[in-house]
Length: 102
Image 1 (cartoon, rainbow, N blue to C red):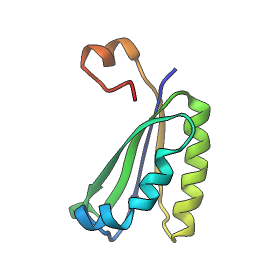
Image 2: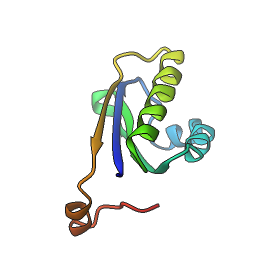
Image 3: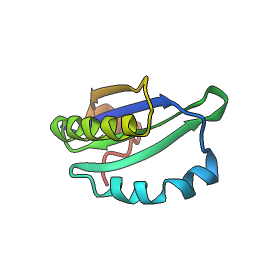
Image 4: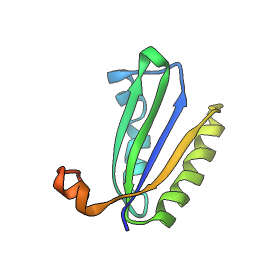
């Protein structure tokens, strides 16, 4: 069953294009994560938060990535990491054109 992972954390940036340049290698690494279908990178400079929304093939893949990513963020000195692992209702998501495929 597809599993959605939502992660956010406080940060001082970078934002926008600077974020894209700073994290290009990380994005490439994340793109090769087993079971990952896609990631949407999120940021809100006004609130000082960054993160992402991910769709995985299954819950074990999402949880394995969450453990890896939490350790990576912690190694960068980031704390107060919030995460939700959620099941996806395929029928309703398809009706509202949610991107369930790669």
